[in-house]
Amino acid sequence: QVQLVESGGGSVQAGGSLRLSCVVSGYTYRRDYMTWFRQAPGKESEGVATIYTDGGLIYYADSVKGRFTISQDDAKNTVYLQMNSLKPEDTGMYYCAARDNLGLWHMPANYKYWGRGTQVTVSS
Image (tube, rainbow, N blue to C red; front, side, top):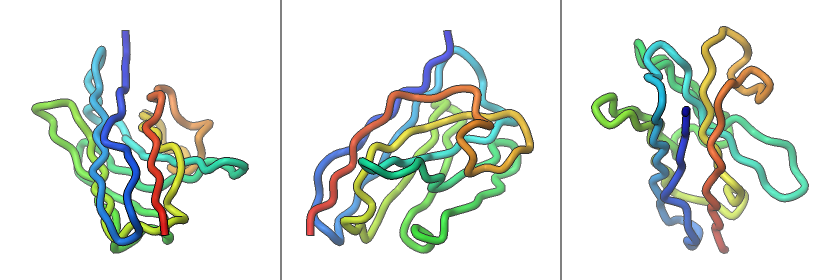
């Protein structure tokens, strides 16, 4: 059974940092694209960062460039999202997702596996 389990969310003040983890079990994500999405109440899901696990190709949403860093630890089958200089507009539920196709990375419909999310709340 494939599982993606996120953790590391919480409540922080603006300017603070959090590191999210996505532990993958039930399959090997090698040669897949792992992506972090977020969704704020009343808003559409937004692709935040993606990494190609067999080569390290990385893309970020413009809203997080220079502040967020996505990385992977193959030994732990885990993908991370380091979030620095957090802003109130970063608030939302953060999800980890996996895809094995070449579709647009920020399109949720292209993903085959999803986690249940971890909440991030940034106060001003």
